[in-house]
Amino acid sequence: MLLILSDESDVSTNDVVNWLNYFSVYYKRVNGNSSINLKNIYLSDEGVKWNLTITENFNPLPVSISSDSISQFWYRRGALSINKSLTISPNFSPANYQVIDELQRCINDNQNDVIDFLYHNLQSVKSIGSWYENDTIKIVNLQIAKQTGLLIPPTTIVNTKEELIQFLHKHGKCITKGINYNGFLLDRKLSGGCGTELIKEEDINNIAETFAPSLIQKYLEKLFEIRIFYIDGKCYSAAIFSQQDEKTKIDFRNYNEERPNRIVPYQLPVDIEQKLVKFMNAIEMKSGSIDLIVSPQLDYIFLEVNPVGQFGWISDSCNYTIDKVIASYFRIKFY
Image (cartoon, rainbow, N blue to C red):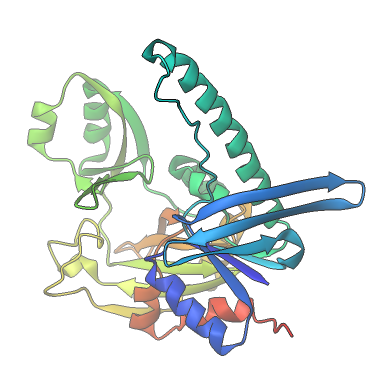
């Protein structure tokens, strides 16, 4: 059986599932908001076994999953969670809430160790993706990309106005972006995150003398951007002509819905593909979305990799049928 962990609303997962149905691949899907109840974990000289039940929002009947039945695993998005909370008596004294908080913390720590155990065991079968890849560190990836022969933008992390000005004087036009891939969502209505922004003169004038550590990069002129969906040693690349639109010039993810960027299939040079494979092997990432830019001097410059980036729009724009490619990876029929 193929076990899939994703988000309930992820369209790309739905597309892959359609192909899995077509290929008659037996699978079970767990979503990040699923309710998980651990029945048992058993370890002995004979091996490791575990059993749990999953209850989905759209299906109140629990589904049983055992380690013996899982031969493949696809981590797409989301997280496993076991949410067991203390039940507090109405007569409990508020003065003892600190004790309750500490007990709940201990319970959470234990549950997190169990979840890590499950992730560790799921990575032992044929798999794509890993929950641990969510902790990929952008600045470490830049360092490893450089070590594997890829070009990277001049980059610094500073927390003082003085250091920032020195970097700007050295490199001229610069951008800032998040050190982490973080963001937030409030009540499903308001979202925010750290995008890529050009540093303006008024930013320098208004900034404090010290601030939180911030990632700064030299702004590089480009002919176009390249988004690559990488899976198991293969690159599915798309050229994005974002430079021709002021709205998307700094970052194509500032989408122009009225006049979308032109996106076409693109064949990377062999040596660049080889370096990307070497890089992905070095960070132990089997799949992900890689961003490059091509400079006016035709240099290929690595920007970042997102382990759970969307791939549907590349697939549709370039006719790559990436959803079929992923389903084919798990194409084992069960009888």
